[in-house]
Image (cartoon, rainbow, N blue to C red; front, side, top):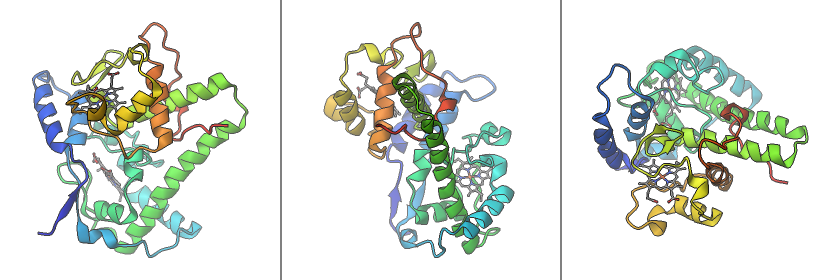
Length: 275
Ligand code: HEC
Ligand code: HEC
C-alpha cells in the first residue's frame, strides 16, 4: 500500500471523546452530539497518487448542467437538490449526509473530490460510485458542486445589495458564525445554550470572558500556544472571513438572557462584505 495523507489528524483523539460520551447514550436514537462525533471521527484517507488528477473538462454552462442532472439522479436524495443535505434521508443517516457547500467540503481539491465520489467513504452512508458513474460524469459532478458553493455565495450578496444598516450587517456575521459553529462540529466539545459536549468550556458566556478578538483568532489557529496543553484541534483551514465570523459570533454569546442574534437561516454560507 502506498502512503496516504490523513485529513482528519484528530481522528484518534475523537475516538477517545466518543468513548467518553458513550456512557450517556443508553437511549434509542443517537443524539445530535453522538452523530457529530461519528462524523468527525471517521477518516478520509486519499492515496497520494490519486491527487495529481486534474479536471479535464471546462466549467462551461453545459458541463455544469449535465453535472446537475447526474446530481439530481444520484445524489440529491441524500444531499438535497441544493447540496445542503436538509433531506429526511440525509438527516436520518449516521453520520448524516454532509452539507456540500460547507467549508469542509469546499476545501477538498478537484482530485480529492474525484476520489471521494468514486470510492465513497467507509463506515458512512456515502456510497462508492465507481460502478455507476463514469469518470467523465464524475468530473461534471465536481464542476456542479463548485457551482453550488458559488450559488450560495451569490444568494448572500443579493441580500447585501439592499443596503443594510450596521446592526443588520453585524447580525449577518453572527448568523454566519453560528452556521460555521455547526458545520465545523464545535458543539461536539462545547456547550452552547445548554446543548453539546463538555470537553471544552461552555461558550454560552464566551463574550463575557474578556478575551480580545486577537486572542480568539490566535487561539483558533494554534490553541496550545494560548492555552497550555490544549487538546482543541486547530482550525487553520478556515479563511480569515470565517474566523472573523466565528469571533463575532462568540463575542456575542453573553448568556441566554441577552442573546439577540438572528437565526442561522439568514446566513447563506458566505461572509457579509465589509465596506
Ligand atoms: C445514500 C445517501 C448518499 C448518497 C446517495 C450520496 N451521498 Fe455523499 N455523503 C453521504 C453521507 C452520509 C456523507 C457523510 C459522510 C461524512 O461524514 O463525510 C456523504 C459525504 C459526501 C461528501 C463529503 C466528504 C467529506 O467528508 O468532506 C461528498 C463530496 C459527497 N458525499 C458527494 C456525493 C455525490 C457527488 C453524490 C452523488 C454521486 C453523493 N454524495 C451521493 C450520503 C450520500
Ligand atoms: C475536540 C474538542 C474541541 C473542538 C472540536 C473544539 N474545541 Fe474549543 N476548546 C476545546 C478545549 C478542550 C478547550 C479548552 C482549552 C483551550 O482553551 O484551548 C477549548 C477552548 C475553546 C475556546 C477558549 C475559551 C476561553 O475563552 O478560554 C474557544 C473560544 C473555543 N474553544 C471555541 C471553539 C470553536 C468555535 C470551535 C469550532 C470551530 C471549537 N472550539 C472546537 C475543545 C474543542
